[in-house]
Every structure is written in C-alpha cells, then in structure tokens.
Length: 401
Image (cartoon, rainbow, N blue to C red):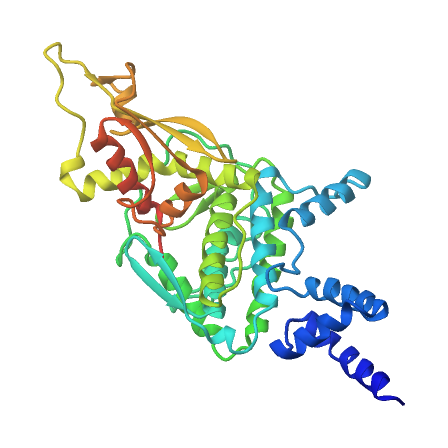
C-alpha cells in the first residue's frame, strides 16, 4: 500500500469523529482539506453528518404529545369504543398516561429524588413512589364512590360495613351542598391521614410495584366512569362533596401538577395538558373560586364583604370579569362577595363589573395549585385593583396537601 493510500485511509477513518464534532482542530482542518479533493470521502462525510444530526440533543426523540391523541382518534373512528369514556373523564385518562410515561423512564437513582409539592399551607417533600401513594390515596375517594375497593388500609377501629353496590345509581345534585363540619386536624385531615397510611403500607415495595398499583386503580376508575356517564354520583373528599364529573377533572388537575413536580425533581420535560383538557380544568377552577373567596374573607377580615349599601339601602354585588387567554380561553363573571349577595334579599346583581382581569389559562391553574406567587403573576387588569388582588390571593386557597 502506498503512502498516499495509507494517508487516504487514515483520513477516512476520522470521518465518524468529524461528523460528531469530536476531532481535534488540526485533524479536522486536514480532513476538510482532503474532502475538497476526494469526492468519495466527501459523499461519505455528508451522509455521516446528516446521520449525526439525528443524534443531536437539541432534537428530542420523544414523539409529539398530540400523536397519541391522533392515533386514538383514528382508531376510534374505525371502531368505536365498547365503553366510551365520557368527555369529563378524558383529562384524567390523558394525564395519568403522561405521568406513567415519565415513571416508566425513571432509573433507580431518580426514584430516590425528592419532589417538592407546594400548596397554600406549606410544601410536602416526597419521593416519586410516595407521590404515587398520595395520588392513589386521594383517587380512592372516587373508588369508594364508584363501589370499587379502597386502596388505603383501614384506620384502626371497627371495620366499616361493606358496600354491596359496584356503581351507585346516578343521583342528581339537588340544591347547594350542605356545609360540612371539618374533622379534627383541619379540613384536609382525611387526605393527610389516608396518604400517610398508604405510604406506610407500600413501604418496602419496589417503585415499579407501587406504579403498578396506581396504574391498576387508574384503569379501574376510567372503566367505571364509562358506566356512569352522567357523572352525578357524589364524591366525598371529607372537606367537600363534588359530583363525579368534577371529581375526575380535579384528579386530572392534581395528576398534572404533581407529575410536573416529579418531572422538575428529575429534570424531565413535561408537557402541559391538551387545550381541551386544560379548558375543563380552568372551568372547574372558576366554579370553585367562590369557595376560595369565602375562605379568603374568613382568613383575612380586610376582604370581608362589599362596601356598605348606599342611601337607598340596596347593595350591589361586586363582580369581576375574568378573561382567560390562550388555548383554554373564555370569559366569566366572578361574584366576589358570595352568590348570596347577588341573589339574596340584601343585594342585587347588576351594573358593570368593578374590575376586569386577563391571564393565561395555564398560569391560572398553576396559581390555583399554589405553584405561582399571586403578587408576581403577569395579569392584565382594569378597574378596582383591590378586587383583582382579592381574586389572585383567593386562587391558591384551592390547593391542598
């Protein structure tokens, strides 16, 4: 072999490293000079450089989030589901699938990372398997309402009477919910106690076994939702009662929020909910906002009620126009002083809202989860600034442990 052939082969052997940008500068310069004169090596270099582009860290290999929904839509168009999931159950289906995809990719060390779960009363710090324990425990309220087994071990004491029904009859909601007396330990005592019992019960299990438990319950919940399409079955959280359709959206919301908490702890990319699912979450937040405003008035006397009645003795209820921007956009009128001020004998609806505010739908949900600072959130506002601040500071009160 001549020295020219040996030099050609030596330079050709550098093509792979050069395509990946791993050649020292002097070798790269020598090889690039060779490529100007050698057509064979130049063609090979172009192929390798193109292939190396597919390995770039700037281009994730994960399929776009919309692909799963496109495939499902195509399949369902050809063969409708035997038990179609109601529209209010779809956000939960999507968010549990997204969280499961994250968990599938976690390695042993990542299962030991600690995720921070902020809420308006503080910050919980849990490992991913413990986050699943919390989600499973709260999802258990829906399981009980649907006649499914409770995933949480029973508390010490006399056993509860077994239920003979798998899916309770559809009981339409009648009138406003009866105010509940919070149990000792605060309004969220049932949630914290159930979470603690389930985390203790799953201690010692492999993380993937905990994941399997959660997956199995999520699947059973979705299947049972298909058997209760009206979604009127009441779900008792211990501090509030929601119809099943709202409870499913609530669980999707928390699954997204805590999935993002885990993703942040393990430095994993995590997409927001699909626009149609985010819209359902925004609508639920807006429906629950009067409850949060009532809590704000109780906790902070400076927000306790509207200004005094004028000389005529009729007080006009204060309202704020809430405009949500982005793909989950919409517009709502929010009663600041409770629905009783608008509909009761002491007040009257009417007049222009005292203020208007505009914010992004995803940011609204993040604020409702106490994952944003109400004083730092970008908000477009017009009118009574104090009324806008009232809404912003009430939203985080919807969060819970």
